[in-house]
Image (cartoon, rainbow, N blue to C red):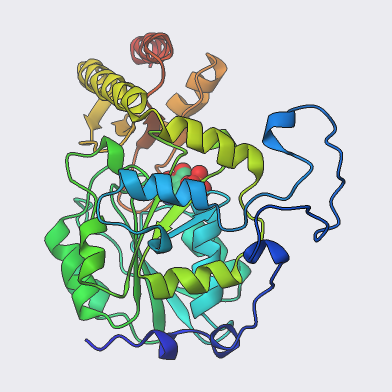
Length: 352
Ligand SMILES: Cc1ncc(COP(=O)(O)O)c(C=O)c1O
């Protein structure tokens, strides 16, 4: 399949003259270029919060490039959560009222919401009832489609998609394929980042919101060819990652061992919670998980959902999603939070 980035981009983006600031060229000196206040309010002087952040977040890109093998800093886009990357990609490639995206329901809701916001049609090629990816079905529905969003491990089903099927989609489609790896650090499968070397139409998204425990700072990552990332950098608002976020992310990324320990503890809790739930009468099945949550099929799911909330345990009802009948999506919390969930489920199972 022939991939031509220039052909794929919206014409207004291809020809876009991006916003430029003097900070694109100079990072230090007597900074009288950006109408900032020379005095800091004194709340966190070390961070220079009176100054705009580095628009190219160079330190962060370098650090991430060190952690992600064989990824150059120029192949990294950072945004206000991966949600910003989703929005940006749709804006770059899809002309409202004309182009389409393709998703594989049941899946993460923001792909379609972002498309809807931009007046872009969403085509659906559902996962099979066992939540596996059907590459043939995807490839048969790509007429007018510019971007295919695949999510692995998938939300809300918790399973990973088979790499061979993902590859078939990437290789059989001449548009952009986004593989959303928000939950990859919890998976038995490895990231598809190495595929970037062979596939110029691939974008891989990851985030600091899950395994890295930093949902509050809003930092999402997109990895792709330098050409695609260059366009993302041109289209993004100039200072889209604020100084507080850059600082917190740098600190966390300096200590990957701590994150690794957190992942291991979530994985062992995931097994414990899954095993306990499986023993309960009211539980029909716990789906296999490669993420930090479980899709649990329970009898009377809407009722259980409401009663759990009354007992102070908030989970997500997903029984209204395709192939997810009776499904509750339950995030793995701290051990004591998981105990509270299991206690509440016990009570409900007995009283139901
Ligand atoms: C599959 C998936 N992708 C992306 C996101 C959003 O991530 P971020 O917090 O980086 O915007 C989520 C959040 O739940 C998600 O489940």
